[in-house]
Image: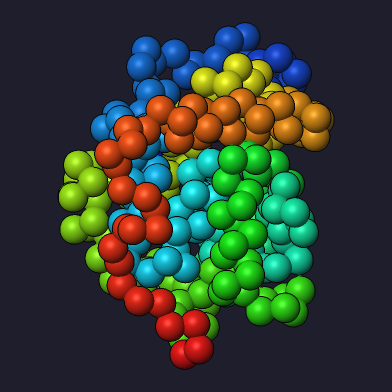
Length: 262
C-alpha cells in the first residue's frame, strides 16, 4: 500500500514538474520506495489448473476454476457472470458487472471499478466445451441467470465457496499451500504473457487500469485477443496430449455429488 501511494504521489509531482513547471524536479527520488515487498504469489502450471478443477467437490465449480485461470478473471467478475455474458458458442465472456461484498450491505452488484475492467475476453478454444457443458447442466435459460451459483441456486459468496470446496485443504493436497483464488487470475496473466502478447494487449485482456500506463485506454483489438487465447489454448492442448495414458479420465475423478434441483 505504501509503495502504491508513493507511485501515485510521484506521478502527481511529475505533472507539476513537466506541465505546471511549479517545481524544477520531482522530489520523489527514494530508491526502491516504489517497489512492493509482498511475497511473490504462486503461479500454477496448466496441469495444476486442471488438477485443481478436478478436485472441486462440486462439479459446478469446475468451469469456474478454468475461466478464472484461462481468462484472467477476478472473483467478483467470474461470480457475477450471467448467461447473456457468455457467447452462445462460449467463444468469449463479457465483463460488464461485478459482485462486491460490502459489510452491512451484503452482496452488491455494480459496474467494474474502472473503464478498463469492462471488457470482452476471448475464451481459449480448448476449454469452450467445458463452458458449454456447464451452461447446459447448471445455468437457467433466462439471459440474466447467474452462470455460477451454489448447490441451491444462490449467488456465490467467496466465503461460502471456500467452505463448499474446502479450499484450504484442497490447495494443500494440490501441493500449493496458501494458494488464493486470485492466484488463478495471476496464473492466467502469466499464461497470456508467455503467449507473446504485448503489454497493451495484456492490460486489455486483464482489465488492468494503471495511471502509469496511459495506453490502457488504447484497447488491444479483438483479433489480438483471439490470438492470445489461441496460444493459451495451445498450452492446454499440449498438456492434454502429453498426459500419460495411466492417468485417470476426468469422468473418473471422485468428488461430491451436485444436486442441481436444490
